[in-house]
Image (cartoon, rainbow, N blue to C red; front, side):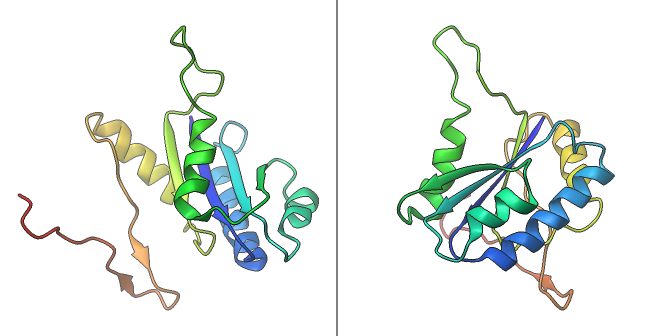
Length: 148
């Protein structure tokens, strides 16, 4: 149903906090057993792969030998969900959540996003409300000039 993808490079402690908050919210939503968490590690030298192996055995690790960056990292993970020639998929997910490793998921956020997407089936993309560490609103939306 849900696949969370996190691209990481030398931010082990931030990633640890992100994964803990994500797993707690997946538990709260009753999705811990069906959601997939994928971390794309871009050749971190801070022990990130070992931390994932030791502390988060259910997290899927895609280890890159070089720093491939955020966009390529997400594309690498998403490409594993490709549709096969017969129209089937060897991996399926209804929703994808692309997260930065410094994200902290607040309780109820996962269910809120899923509820919104299910209530608006024509919606192709939504994003959560962003908050700064002090709790103040972080403005992440903007208009592109000249587009209507």
